[in-house]
Image 1 (cartoon, rainbow, N blue to C red):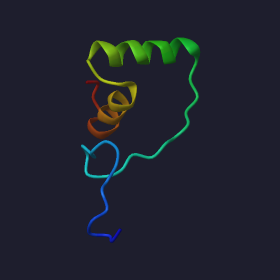
Image 2 (image 1 turned 45 degrees about the vertical axis):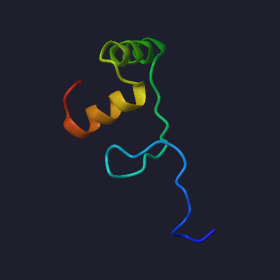
Image 3 (image 1 turned 60 degrees about the vertical axis):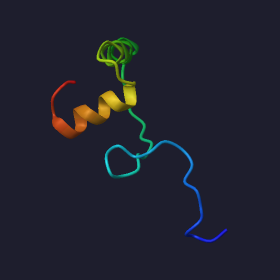
Image 4 (image 1 turned 180 degrees about the vertical axis):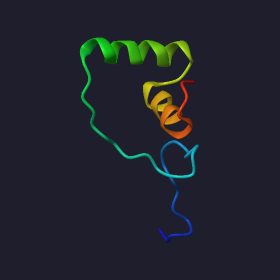
Length: 59
C-alpha cells in the first residue's frame, strides 16, 4: 500500500498534534477527585487534563 492510500486508524486529533503517554504520581484521593471532576464536566480524564494544560483553567 502506498503512502497516499494508507488509511489512518484510530481517533482523529482534535488539537492538531498526536497525544503522547506520560506517567504522573498522585494520591488515591487526588486521582479519584480528578476522575470525578472530569466526569462531571463530561470529559474523559485525558481530555480534562488536556484542556487544563492548554488553557490553564479548569473545564
